[in-house]
Amino acid sequence: MFSHTLPALFSRSETAEIIRLAEDGRLKRGGLVGGQRHDNIRRADICWLDDQGNASWVMDRIVDAVARANRAAFNFDITEFKEKLQVAAYDESDEGHYDWHSDIGDGPIARYRKLTIVTQLSDDEDYEGGELELNVGSDVTIAPRERGSSTLFASFMLHRVVPVKKGKRYSLTSWCHGPEFR
Image (cartoon, rainbow, N blue to C red; front, side, top):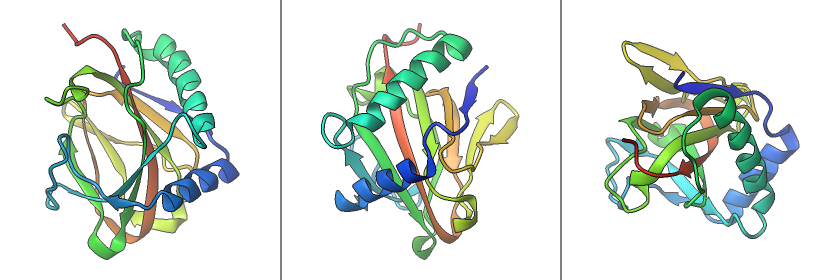
């Protein structure tokens, strides 16, 4: 199993608060691992939430949920969360998207990513397009779009966010880290 769904990890009011925290933190154009920008690969505004400050409750929920899901579905050797929480906004005004990629990279932290968890912060009817797609061999699956639901998957899996055609999609992403895969 390479993906696992956690329905209703966050409530409607909690997802609204996460979006508010991100907007207060001033969303800025996101790049790739290493900070490089390639608009043909990724067009999204992002904000890093302080997981020790006013968003610590979000990180606490993620850590607890990942521990349970990892035991149930992956059994990966996860030792820590080395990165802050990332909120991304994909807007119709620039066909916000993120082309096929994996979350493991050459960066000093990215090479230790084991699991990725993406939480849907927007209502399904607030946008068109913007689906999170996971590539499992020759099959492509679409992550649930219910507000507050989370999808966990192995960070080495190819995945993408297809262009948003109408409205705006918000998501919350976190990565779990451990020893490199062998």
